[in-house]
Image (spheres, rainbow, N blue to C red):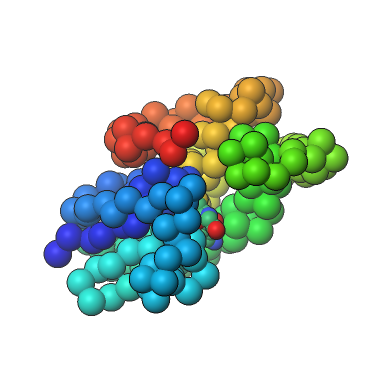
Length: 214
Ligand SMILES: N[C@@H](CCC(=O)N[C@@H](CS)C(=O)NCC(=O)O)C(=O)O
């Protein structure tokens, strides 16, 4: 069965694509152009009523929310590809903990930076310097905690690569490659080594080949 992934050019769908590559799951992509408003088209809203990507279809089964999708794929395809969930209940607990940290602590400030530095002009709203400054401060504090954690273990949940690390790839890539903020990673020795490790995985290099919207 081939999994269909909608919206492959954007960051949140890339979280799903890199998971599918790690799990060695065959997939095909369905382009959705956010700039043309295709995510608000009634046909798309029937599948994803909140009108955002990613969305997957695995046979008759439809699922949205990128972190729900990666949990589903890592569990469903447990016996193939990279184990992304840890080997014990305790390891799984730590994977879940750091996935939540990514979603609740890391993502809000980095998403604000991406929106206000990279996408404000394309999306047609004014970039707000106060939001940029506050978000950068918040993200710096989160990364200080990562630095401490990564001085004790190679990856976030322990000495094994997991969904928790993978979930950071798309938005950290924007920070490093497109926003002139690479120093936020490089100024922190252990975060920097972690980033080099996870961003050099063949899975992520393959996903980058899908390109970006603009
Ligand atoms: N919490 C959602 C967020 C998805 C999201 O924000 N997707 C962006 C692309 S990266 C999008 O579709 N933006 C258009 C919109 O929400 O109107 C997830 O993780 O799947």
